[in-house]
Image (spheres, rainbow, N blue to C red):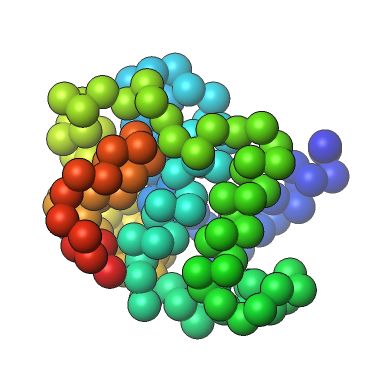
Length: 144
Ligand SMILES: [Fe+2]
């Protein structure tokens, strides 16, 4: 585990972090969720939210991991990994009435300093948070 933590630290020291961490920090503050759990559950929804802006890097990651060179495949494999690890696919602790403020908190942390493939606006961050909460009631395609 220490070797894995070291390698993870090396990776994010070089590449920095993105919206999954900002969201996880907001969720940790609001609900006392463990940071790793919040990151793991948030990451697939964040990557989907990046849409075409992250497609090529995700294709390369999928291919490097031995999967077909597909962003959708990479995200699906992340969800499958979470499931194999016994992690939830969504975070039902997120209260709908909290999503607006969680979005503002995450955006305040991340924008504009985090080197994300695409800057989310408030509506896009709200949509991602709804997905993480397991509530996808807003209009389809608004995060693409
Ligand atoms: Fe973090």
